[in-house]
Amino acid sequence: MNIFLSSFTGTIDKKNRISVPSHFKSTIKNSKEKIYIFKSLKNPCLEIYLEHKINSIISSVEEEDFFSTKKDNIRTAILSDLEEIIIDNDGRFTLREDHKKFSKITTEIIFIGKGNYFEIWDLISGVRHKEIARKNMKSI
Image (tube, rainbow, N blue to C red; front, top):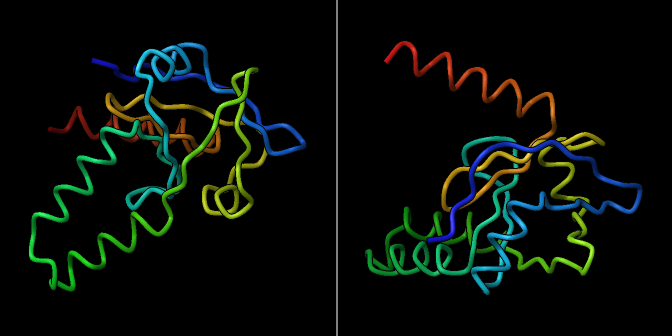
């Protein structure tokens, strides 16, 4: 099973290119799957999924009532923003301007592994998110 673990910091260059951390790049390469990016529905970050997980999401939404407004909202929110990304030979991909604006990414970023996907955050927001998550776990 291909999973994304740990957190890594990085930068976005002047051409809006992001270098994927080597651990995540290896996971993607070993999977031999396409990868997709979309704007998170939970947080001001970007989510990166392998193709099999996207297919699973699509299948779960399609199994439900096709005419449901709720399911239509889910399909629209996820699938209309979904974009395949291609990682070049140097392990980089180009971030679209609307993705950059949505996630408030400027220069420094953090990659946060979430098991079957990973997130890309602005560094300050991502570190804060991790701290809040840890704090919330202590109160459970």
